[in-house]
Each structure stands twice: as C-alpha cells, then as structure tokens.
Image (cartoon, rainbow, N blue to C red; front, top):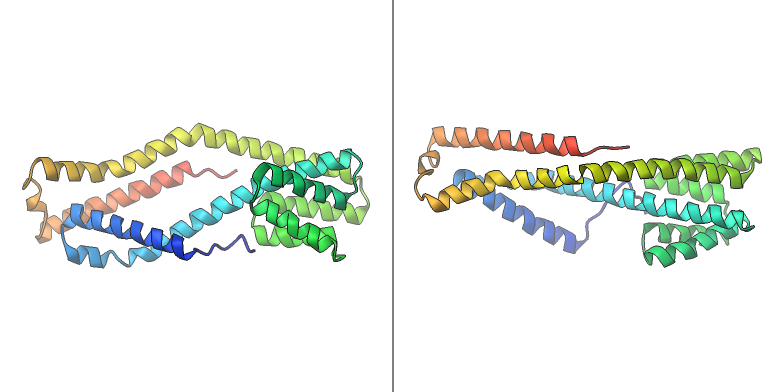
Length: 244
C-alpha cells in the first residue's frame, strides 16, 4: 500500500457527496436563496474532495507512524531480551496485534515477516516501507538501520537511540496537539457561527434580509461576505495545523 496516496471507498464517497450537497445547499440558501447559486457552487466538490483526501491521507500516515513507533519499541525490547533482529520483528508483530488488533503497522509488520521468510533482507523491506509511507520517522529509521547493517554497528544500541529520538519527537507532537485541541474546537465552532447567525436572523425576522437577495448589489455584498468568511476559515485552519 502506498500511504502517500489515499483512495476513497464507495461508502466514503457517498458520505462525502451527501455532506457536500448539504453544505452547498446551506450556503446557497443562506447567502443567495437561489438554485442558480447551488448549481454554480457544485464544482467546489472537486476542491472539497481533494481537501478530504489530504486530511485522511495525513491522518493515516500519522496513525502509521505512531503504530510503527510502538513496533520498533517492541523490537528494541526483544533485542535486549536476546532475540535476533529478524525474530525481534516477529515479536513486535505479536505485540502490535495485542495493542491494536488490526491496523496499518500490524499489516506492514506482517508483510515484513512474511517477506523475511522468502529470504528478502530487512534493510530492503524497511526501505520499501519508508518509500511508501511518506512518514519522516520511518524514513529516518530505515536509513539508520541500513547504515548500521552496512557498517556492522551495534544494532541494539543504535535502534534504542533511534527509538528514543523518535519517541521524544512523538511526545512533543502529542503535547502540541493537546495544547491546541481547545483552539481547534473553538475554530470549528466559530466556523459555523456565521451560518447560524444568518439562519437565526432569517427565521426570527422574516423579510429582514430580503433586500440582500435577488438583486445585483445584494449578490455582490453577500459574495464579498462569503469570500471573507472563506478566507477567515482558511486562515484558522492554517494556524491550528502545526507540524513537528
């Protein structure tokens, strides 16, 4: 599996399509009250689908990285207990299955162990995973592991040090996510507030906003408001997305 690209299932596509049609309908009604606007906004589905694909691809890569870290920690523990490197990866797979049941890393460790039985080298398999993962930590581990194998270094010490370095990075990432979790929730809430305000004014004072619809000046003003709303939403997303 190439983790750098994400493919939707039919069920996911159906759910996303329903969600976009609902969003398109809400925006068209609240800002324009026009079926023409609904039709004109339909091409936005391409942008919406691309964004959702990027979000899910990043989420899958983060999940793979977190699970892989658990796996190499298990590898390090198995090496300390006296297992060979190849057998240590077998032990890591069992530990991952206990912790996650099914998951990206469980599948990858299973593939690695199956390929090892076919006499493929561990360096080759880890390099292949690193290329497919698009995950910086996995790429770093594969490079360090391959270099250690070539140089004949102490694998147990090298893997332990690499695990420690990646673990510190993961802890920092989690601490940042905890710190900004409230801000992310605030951003989500504030993103829907303008829509609720328009809906509330329209329901509480029928006719109050009629002057903004079905005329050129109103369309221009509402379009400007929608553009500002979109830019504010994009800026908020940019500010709460912090990569480590």
